[in-house]
Length: 168
Image (cartoon, rainbow, N blue to C red):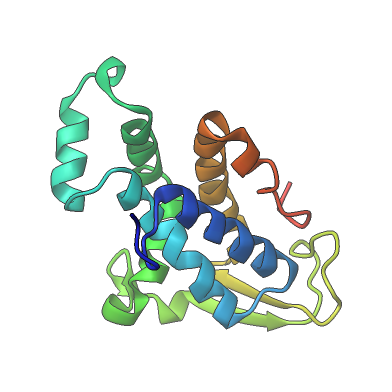
């Protein structure tokens, strides 16, 4: 019997769905923390182990022999957006991205900004950028990878997983 604090990848994804939807509707610093952790670590829940060892073991296999989890792991690893998610998640420890201070690449813009607004955004929204990219544009491709993965395994779980204010 699972304990009260037992999480599965599916439960972790469900949490991500709730937090991501709330964040896309109303971006905040607290929302970043709630979204970046599952975006970063859900990959490890699907392919557990030490990142370097897991990555090497997966890379050593021919693609045809890789599981869907392993394909997702490799795909995420190669995404610039995932690199930024990882850098944001580890920011409290490392403070850098590509060997440069991450703080210098982070910015908050208060109020509606052309090119960053989404359908449903309030005029008083705060936009968060990393390396000049609106953070929802960083989070969305990573979220979409998880969505696609879970949609094939659990369509009912993924059915409500696309927030209305997601980037197009």
